[in-house]
Length: 103
Image 1 (cartoon, rainbow, N blue to C red):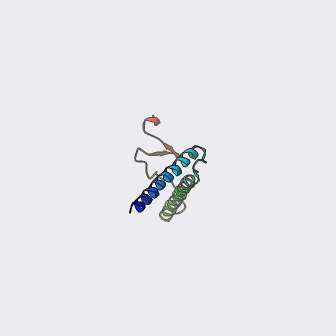
Image 2: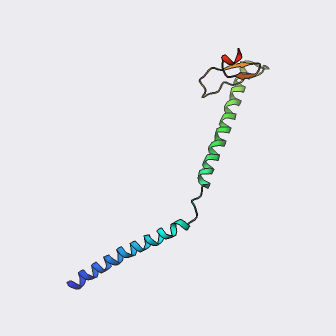
Image 3: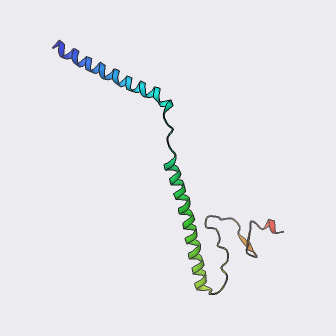
């Protein structure tokens, strides 16, 4: 019975030592590894940007088509920004930020 227990303890000790050795080696190599790539992150950002651009273009086109159905042949006014809740005025085709700047 003594031999079985000593073999088990020996295997356990070898397992622990090898585990430590593996991690120690990787920790020494870690500073020399290539940095992680940002390709995935950049791809997601670019895709999100162009999705927004296409969404804005589609929204504006739908706005124009709706306006032309109701007012055929007329010039389409500037579309009010969707996510801007502040004051909004248009003077001769150009947007004015606030009432104070026009005085």
